Image (cartoon, rainbow, N blue to C red; front, side, top):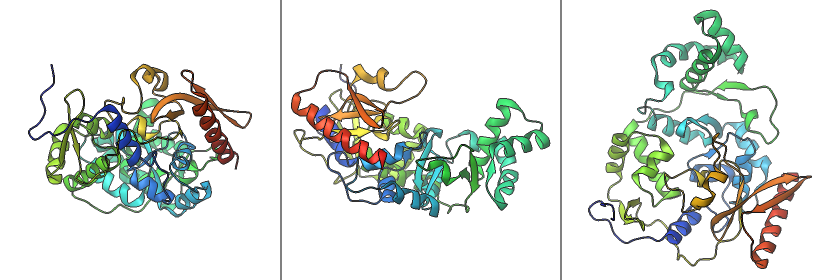
Amino acid sequence: MMSKVGAGAGRVLTLRELNRATLARQCLLQRTRLSPAAVVERLVGMQAQWPQAPYVGIWTRTTSFRGAALERDLASGAVLKATVMRQTLHLVTRRDYAILRAALSETNFPDQSALARRLAPAVRAMAATGPVTMADGLAYLKREHGLTGVHARRAWRWARTRAHVLHHHESALWHTPPERRFAAIDEPEVHDPTEARAEILRRYLAAFGPSSRRDIGAWSMMHVPEIGRALERLEPLVRLRDEHGRELLDIPGAPLPDPQTPAPVRFLPKWDNVLLAWADRTRVLPEQYRKTVIRMNGDVAQTFLVDGFVAGTWRIEDGRVVPEPFSALARSVSRELQDEAARLGAFVAD
């Protein structure tokens, strides 16, 4: 039985239509000439648990990216490494950091806890004169508050997040130093939380739509009422459906390319946003490969797309990018895959 959809839900989008819309908005259908900071902002942040991931993610979406350009943005503070959506590490622009922190401020993340509120001023004061290490923070929490072990590590993370003490930009370089340091940034601009959520959800739909409310929740971890109030600020929205009858929301004028638009081979890094931005990821990641790509421990493999869908993983071996397809590929596709692998290998070695 087809699930009930909201009033005014319009045309049904096929899986391929959703796929091509996603690729177009993610700069994976056609590479863009945007700067690194502009790509990060267009995608509302890029996952950065693995330092090299954003570099590969920007390279695969742009025409002439050089890693040094992103590193300049990091050094200047134009791009920050921060804990935001889903309480995971992302690269975000300074402007978006302020909007995201306001948008997430009513989501009851641990940085909103009473403990984080109590400890944040002292943690910020620690970092006022220069970068601090986790060891510095843990030593302070043990000495002044009697916190040790996992309790201290959690308190440190929650308090420094609330205090705007972020990962030092060096931790986001391609070659990261072994010591983890944290640095205070200026207090971000204040935004109304609901208005901030509306802005972020508009940008989410521009980058990842058309999407369902469940998709929005999976991407942001915001609460359902918060999402609903923010979406009301965005009306009128375009209402569509997927092949299962689920309502999809979109912003007016967003691209919906022809489903037969050719999609080139693209390589994606670990934890690429395009694999994690929906509750239903089949628009890019076929269900039969989901557990191979997204592991039980939360790790997300390096993958490549063929005809717009995940078709295998890749690794670096002896300085070469080695694709590992999930199934046999046509000879012409194999040639395209090897050519793209060689280009990525040249970028990684540069």
